[in-house]
Amino acid sequence: MYISLPVLLLLVIALLSAVIALLLLTRKRRHRRKGLFKQLSLLLKMLDQGAHVARKHGQERSPHWGSVAKEHLRREPACVVCGYKGRKRQVHHIKPFHLHPDLELEPHNLITLCSARGKEHHLLLGHLGAWDSYNEHIRADAKHFYRKTAAQIKADLHWKKKMLARP
Image 1 (spheres, rainbow, N blue to C red):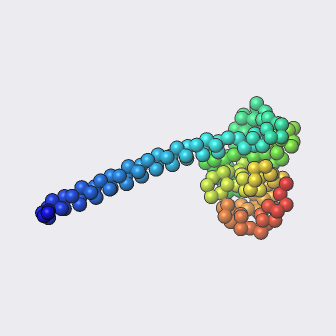
Image 2 (tube, one colour):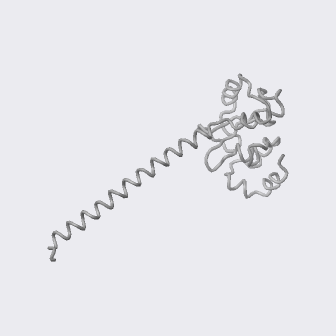
Image 3 (cartoon, one colour):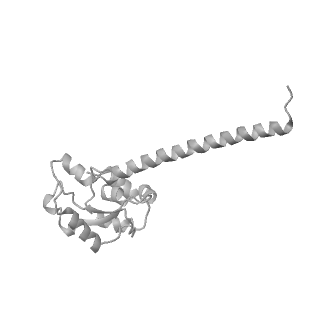
């Protein structure tokens, strides 16, 4: 059986086109799936970790917490560790409100930390790497780790010692 060169070229081009189209379709599906997982992970991150830990200890957030947190962000609009002013700022209790319910709404017990990618100062410094833990010396640590990334903090000997002694 003899196939002319132009017909052979057309067959090769058609085959390559089909493979490319198939790859593009699977790539789009994969991105859609990633988009769905990304949305789900964002929803999970939006859950209030502090309220979750407090519920485990039989406490609930005050109904006034939302307005107190907004007021605090007006007074202290940036992460005290890195100066981040984006959407991933969080109001952190220096002394956890499930252990000190009387301090939940007290301005002197609040500090602004961020959870921005690559920094994550809320988890690293506010909770010493574990949501169930806390750091009563967060103000001093914020000065010590000023303008440092998560990787720099984790490499610091002072932070490693705090991790070993965390509550």
